[in-house]
Length: 218
Length: 248
Image (cartoon, rainbow over all chains, first blue to last red):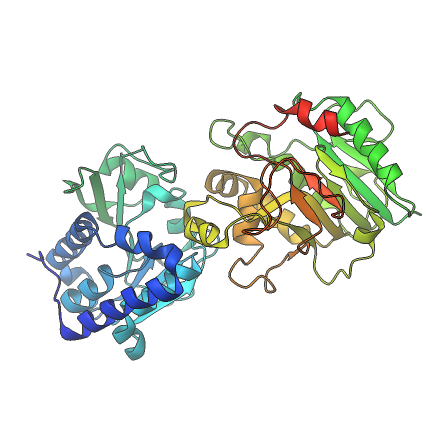
């Protein structure tokens, strides 16, 4: 079971430097970096990796992984690299500050090419490369994923069949926040919204009290 | 043909005809170059009225997009050639004005701007830190679409994106200003966006102030500026009619 994050000296150094740099250069983002660091953020990302770990044989030994709206990617990037041996994690963000700050949290992986952040509205245009796994842990913040799934279907060269990456999607029924524009009432509804065939569906009540749903499928 | 064209847009009942008459009157008193004047509207009654298209109506959800002044975006369609939706609309240099503005100075200034890029209002009264912090939450928008200046065909790209992705655009962005802020402006590098901002000192807000943080006094006329806006996100448009009518 994946229930912890490896707190290595390298991670410690990057995170310390991230805090120093946010305070100095991005003081307006201080609260948001704290929001991204709370226990429930870690719980929901551990859940992703724990469930993916159970079906490791379903994807490449060193998968290329796309994050959609991955924010600072402070927890998910090290979890994916340490536990799933991810070859590369590419975060697709619309927020330039999130990009810069994510590079601070993940400097050690940026330097080795294992972490990249692109400024891209992934709902407007298809991804630039093929990924084994696409993770979106913030579906409640955006348009239903069906559009993205349709746009990113890959046509395989040898038989012309359509293929798609393995999707890992999270959302919630917590509609008290203005920016939760697309809440769902169940994991079934999340799968339906994305038009994917679910291999895993689950619910988890986080320590913050928020109920989250997760679907893994293609 | 007269090149300079001033446009306004009016639909529904929030603003009465008096607003259009007054805007036209203000333009005549404050524009030293010849200009065409048109009102794009859902109720054509005057010679200067041109009927607005309706094709995006099915995508508009009043409950979630109350501030989505999407009908304004039809004017971005104005192409290099005569358009079927806007027959009779002449001119190549467009200046859009919201109905609730006060014009202080000669509008010739806007028609003389270098047009390598179109222009839009950058709300200089916004704290840029707040704008950046709330960017991904689709709040605290730096852009205001009360005044837009473009040459014919220059905004076709914007129209095409909305037209192609209407359902996504109207769902994702809570207002037209927020959409433009996200897709067609760059708050991190303001010289790099598709739109250029009208410079500080041109346009200010009656309800929000002028420039953050030094000149934020509200409800103050600044006649050395060109235009005063009456934008206010705290209450519905048209509700504070009396304040602007007193200033006309």
